[in-house]
Amino acid sequence: MPSRNTVVRSMHDVGLAAWFGGTLMGAVALNGATAKAKSSSEGLHLASVGWWRWFPVELAAIIVHGIGGVGLILSNKERLKNQEESRINTKVKFSLTMAAVGTSVVSGVLGKVIDNNAEEGAEGITEPKPDAPEGMKTAQRMQKVLQWVTPALTLVIIVLGAQQGEQQRPVKGLFETTARMFRKGNFS
Image 1: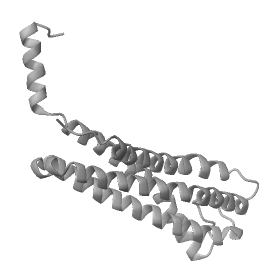
Image 2: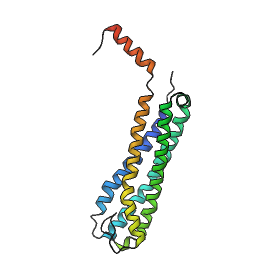
Image 3: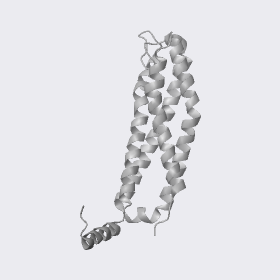
Image 4: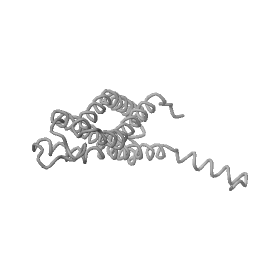
């Protein structure tokens, strides 16, 4: 009889959901809305304020997700030992999680560079002015890409988590259910 892992599974999933949703909302809504500010300097500063307000929540989400992930790995040691596809899925999810942590950290550093240069103004939140300092141009160009990479990585982790849940269905139970349907003549 499989044991339940509701707490660690919830930590894994809720942390990941907050991480994905927050970064996607930031890229779409926060950056989009602050681009409408009265001046580009104000928009850059407001985007930075919003992202720094999100930072503690994102950090907590990453930590909660990580604790849940470790808990799931520990509670599924036997399954991981015996199911190659689950081991592969877990390794891929771990690699993508580390990549998403990396893109989150780099985005934070770039955000600080952009905020420190907000008075320079810009064409947009992630579009530098032609005469902007090179550091600002580089930060904005990199941020333009990374703002989408983190939500994309976390989305793939969500999908892999769903796949791993499907891998957990016992084959024996599938055969028993199918045999029961045949015995009862219930095929619909």
